[in-house]
Image 1 (cartoon, each protein chain N blue to C red):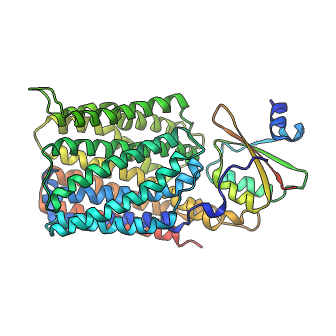
Image 2: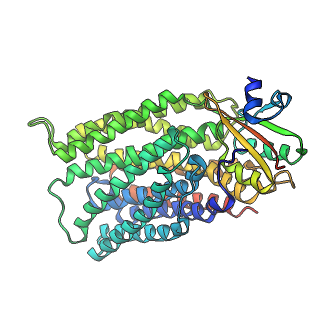
Image 3: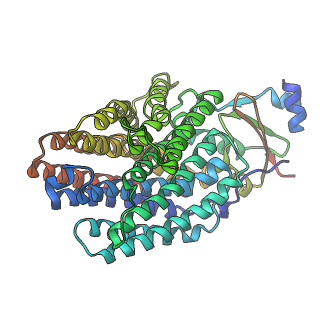
Length: 425
Length: 87
């Protein structure tokens, strides 16, 4: 008989994704701490160092931790290809944490040495993550749209790593490139639409039907979405490489932002609309608190294009701050927390109990994490997102610090939820 | 249809008539159902089930329990799995 698949020793140990997932609340805590420390300075303009620190606490500390942990676990499952050298995943994890700490420290007024250490650690960590993962993805026996989407996301991560590290060298005693704004625009586009958006979309094609019994999106639609996404990622890159704008009308960085429109339409319009429709038409309509995260995150996703247009056209910098806040915390983090409420119990159940099914009585996956715990985390997270919007509008220190406190509370809620599931025996 | 499945899996046509559709179950219920059913498989029995996609996490468990399996991916994206005891 044909035997396709993994052997037990090829599947990554639970400790690998778990260590990354447990760092997610640390990232949230760091973001809360930054707001408590800096007050409104982090919300005045997206170009303030404090705002960059807050942004990267969200992107590197929260999103990347969750996504990298998920990729170590999901690549063998979804693509049928084990990631080689998974033993170095713990080194990747530690280096990412040190890199993030150095990065934030420098942006909050620390020495240039902190950024030098950060650049070194992040370079090694991302290289040690990307090379084995890229190798597994390229050799994967499965080549469905989910795997193609994951490849696109990982390729985007590789490009943003290079742009990000070169840009960060300006904070490590180097000089900023003359085209800094243009390359930052490309970094943003590839990070948020390619890496984060591409991965959310590709993974949702797998996990939403699997966990919530929604209809599968047809292959032709998935392919069109991928082509449109790829177009919206390549065009801004071409604008940046050529460095051209439209004289008198558009600077190259604005042209690069507009060139990303096909990708933005896929990630913040078509994917949320199609996924929300799928959730509405799911086969078994039982109440599930983890779906609240998906629904809230996807609805937030639908707001992103109008807010992006406002941020691009209106002079008030609060639109840009609001765009970044809702994008990282309202859209991406909300969806990621929703994924964690299903993926972590699934992994714990799979690693600890699945081998005993049929041999003895084992707990169900749903019994590992109560709906009450999920709802508590949802309320804490949603409160922090909504309060963030208020704080950005009013621009006062005490509101920013209150926003930070809500993030701290949210971090403890997420940590408590994850620890509870991971300690199940 | 059943004839071609029987040919593909090299199983009896009557076994193919008992395809268990697991597509209406949330993960990990299909895996639970397969492992529970397969724990009672006799030496000549074959389990044939239809899943929404290839069940990669299941394979190590089948391997550990001395079960052989064969997959057929259909054009609608679903997967048929035939499982029997290793001879």
